[in-house]
Length: 453
Ligand code: PLP
Image 1 (cartoon, protein in one colour):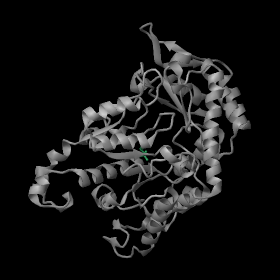
Image 2 (cartoon, rainbow, N blue to C red):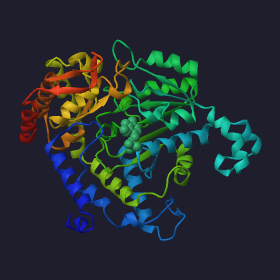
Image 3 (tube, rainbow, N blue to C red):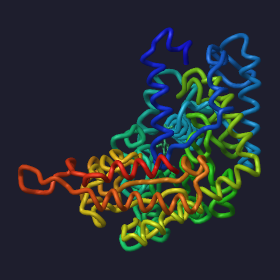
Image 4 (tube, rainbow, N blue to C red):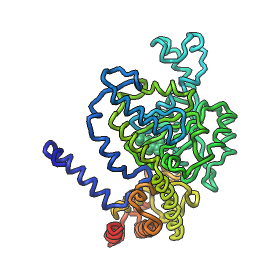
């Protein structure tokens, strides 16, 4: 830090302050974790200085032999870790990985009259003018993913994301009574809509998905099954999700991040069957810029870590701790979406439980040193900005060694803070959606308890 400080002290101060914040607060954001020192150190070195667009052995720049090694080792670890036939480790983030997946699927699947007439094998071989003609056929394709309020991600066809603009899209939700995916309703909707791509995976659904059923539905309607396992990749790697709960082997294409439950550097990757490999391989330069070689190296290190018995123990603890957290909240009267969890995250309905919006709850918890994020719940009465939910996850604190006792205590702290938060009435006389008051002493006692843990 002293070296950084001699150049720009505001940056070294921000780094130090981030470390203090992460040490002194309870980090419960479901998509965050603590990467190992080996992973962090692998990102800060000379690999960062190298350009290497292209693929292993086929680069647009000279002198890429070390990057070739890095990428090959990372892809090998990814294949072995997940039992996949093909892995692509270049995507810089989860969203990038999903875009590469969509482009690859379109490229492989679209049986276009224009393409047939032009005689091209794939769209990358077309001239500008021919592509102009084909663009409309690509744009008419359909994607079907989980709705945002049911726990899906923006990239699964949401209208404010490019995925909602690239495709004609329709979302599936969850059962209004149980909050669970209703596979029969989903089958019906897919039969009617006939998507080219069926997307499975989520950011805020607190349950496991049956990928065998998803495969059946995809096959029935002729869709490619694309699974975004960004959130639960660590549980797949750690063999908590096996059989029908493991997407690899059921999906045609799987995309993921590396930094959430998988505990690697920030980044993305893809796995696929051999049929999709040549199309995914064109991710750079079609969708991605030059690969971040230092991050690919850190992915290799994190994948290697995830292949150990210790990681399997960790992944089991992540899921067990989520159960403890959910039970601890439920016994203190907190309403949970779907009534509980069987993955790494819990979704609290703070409007039903405490009369708060997600925004008020998130801010009050932050005042008390508990870092969470507000999240929509199914059919959210407060909309996507204020929301009615709080999403909490166990991957980060499990990395710090928290077990059942600590997570029960965390549940108590959260329930205490929320029970002592009052919405402030707006000038219209209606309950406000952003302002709140937290009773005296609650923030201090919560912070003191967190510091002890
Ligand atoms: N897919 C899912 C399911 C996610 O939850 C997220 C992140 O929130 C992403 C993709 C995007 O990942 P990134 O932020 O690395 O682009």
